View 1 (cartoon, helix red, strand yellow):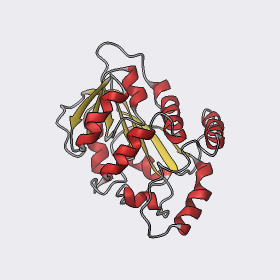
View 2 (tube, helix red, strand yellow):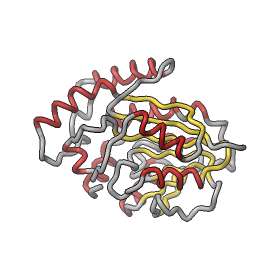
View 3 (cartoon, one colour):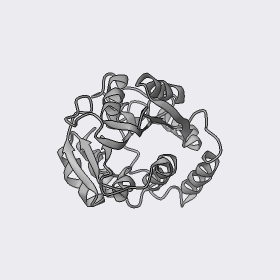
Length: 245
């Protein structure tokens, strides 16, 4: 991902509707399944960037933020005092087996740097403790290629079933798999056609969420997600549990 995109993420994390909504979404899907944090609880925010999406986890307990970009590592501790930044390749983590109580990985498997998403997920599972949770969130709609994908160096997008298979393929018990941000698919598809061939970040677009409308739609979708899984979405998520524990 380009350095300017990290800077945009850091600047927008507090007020951009998508970051606020995504922290709420992840907190509901993963956070409600985590046991109460203790003095020894340790989480991993894998490829967590500047902490824009995972800082709710670092606010809960000490969280290692593993990323390759030095700017992100320098910025993340300002997002949450719970972050412990470590420069790392997700495909060869320096941590011993069974180090973390839970692992969060948001928009990393789609990246060109991770050529084999299944191998990356297996590495995340290796450092997760038995009984711990691994949560994946990635761009959805396989065939959609957006200007934002160019800026973030995207190599692929995923369906809900793709993420579910990655979870099962890493010998995790699938706890949940769902789409999210379904209401963003039509405008994203339209923008992909209108701006084909361009490289443009979404972070600078509609930070307020069209006067709060997108935030309202995201809240309504989260309410629905408390009861059902969605078959698709502009984002897809999967939560798996490591056997044992």
